[in-house]
Image 1: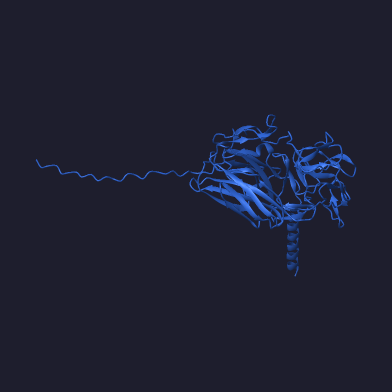
Image 2: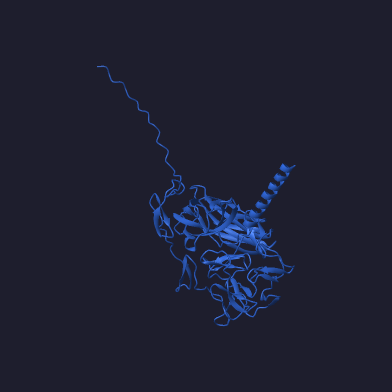
Length: 464
């Protein structure tokens, strides 16, 4: 009986340890795997090496079917891996990495890259925005993707989470997405285009958000208290007269700018946003719940999930999980990790309103569509592009817009070495596995049929 009792206690202890491990993995709020912004921009079909860094020793591997097409992952140290090869995806593409620590705890991290195409490319160019726009559930879908440089027969297919009710068809050098938005949620999927003659393949990722009709006329953008969504600037703007500087936020309770908390573990160049429950880039504009700041396009972009306060998304189980550090509050309240107490839970307000901490009130800075509130001028002004361009682009004064600049690609090193982003030079390394110069797909050529053998009649020599 004593032996049985001991084994039961051991089983109970193991169960508690496994639960603790699961909870620990669900409370990882800091960014553990990352690619620096200057390395996120690549040139389509040009060889590149990208450093993937970790904040602690982790074993990395590609996860799921959507991946950085054309690139391979090679781990060269306990906290560094290399993505190398020729990218054959176009535009922004986000993918998942599996990260395993020394205790065997597994977490899934999401990374994004940007691939710029060239007009002289042999590949088809998919000319379309990545976001198909938020759609009301059961609304009609229609989105046309123009395909440039389509000279031969091609095959098309969709990879990933294809939205329910959506279909696609090809005509006149374009792909058209049609149907009805039947499934509420955020759907990321990839369009694959393959040349049937040359076997060249290219990919482009799209995102479709489908939301329910709650009568708020676009209020699915839920900003922090004291902020409202600006549809022209594409980020959350504070309602008071003074704009808070980098590293600070507008605190509605004290009506002042406050510095973000430093008690959370975020890597250098980032800080913890207590409203979004995650680390964000320093200098980023504030984004609504379930959005993130995109420094390349200078706007907030939708994340592929819909979580509530005190939750984060777990890519392993594909569901929102509660953050352990957040305490339980009474119905109608939520935990504020900055003030360490429960506060009234914000509601989604109608267009032209914002949450003041207790209710939805009229927004004094609301502007009609096509205009945004210019805090420097103190009035609504016509929408225009800002001069703050993200990585991979610069401001063109003659065109009055951001244009892309050439991306340095001189990172190909001789055999036995690799490019170091930190030292900005080639350093010694070769584990015998990395293919330094991956080749493009072999293009079949039409070879002429060999000429038939001509029979030669040789007469016998006459007898002398």
